[in-house]
Length: 124
Image (cartoon, rainbow, N blue to C red; front, side, top):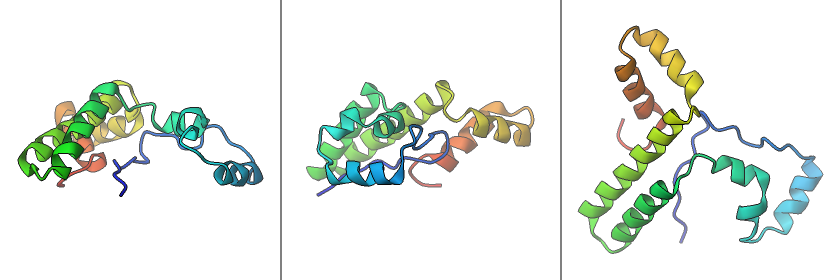
């Protein structure tokens, strides 16, 4: 079984630490769980993942597996909120937020909400 949380392309620069394709192939062949903590690209992709998010997400996953759908929804929705709040607060979505704010005019709160709906998980 594998459980994931979507990594959105907006606001996250993938493969910041370029390496030749041959080296990437070699790295893929010797992948281990240790790689999650040492690979510079994987670390960069998780730069916006906080301990608070992990706690909420793991709680939601645990409730989901246990069949406690109500608690799972609450915790996973909170995890999504944390992810979006962090991305906005730390500037990972700065360019996208500026774009929707220009389109929205003076409604910056509405623009932030629109960006959350566009880039977050869940119903749209």
